[in-house]
Image 1 (cartoon, rainbow, N blue to C red):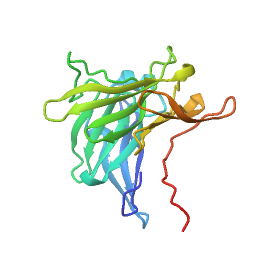
Image 2: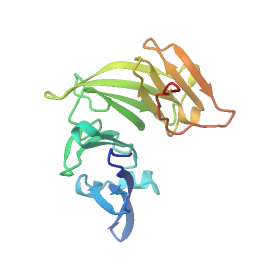
Image 3: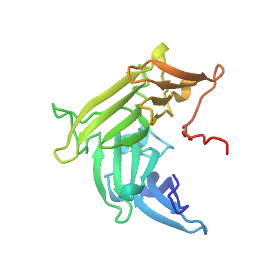
Image 4: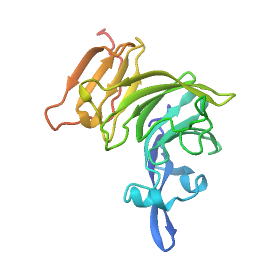
Length: 229
């Protein structure tokens, strides 16, 4: 993700020796315009190593960070960790984790205390106190969805404000993106499903594009097209 001054924040690996074996962990590194590199944050400083996750996700980093956004107004990063089933808020200046959404260490829970808010999530969007997330779902079920959780930042409550499951059996076992447009519609990229849809609030498709058979889409960036001068 790019910061206003041109700095690029990157998710990359930081290796560590665990019982004589090299293990890949996630870190955030900033690259400035002159080529300088600064480490901002590391998973090794935050979460205790889990060998079960490392075995399950061999070769992809044991926490599997897969998406990062920068919040300019707060000078902070939001990072999605697939293996932890969590999205983490990291203060850029201090490197401190202010809060976590989802997973065993979540600072937010549903009314019954459940913190399992999503499974195998990818890209997300922070929208004025709520989190819009593409949820890939369990591999064996082949069901992906988009869910928006409204959050009570003071009391730690979370509740579903909106949810949509893919029509026509759409799912994506990896990748997946979601973005709320200014119109209120939601742009959903069904990664390996090979479909991008613009959805109204009621889930009706306003626009869509499909890849050829076997094709897939990665992440999507919405650009406002300016009128010709």
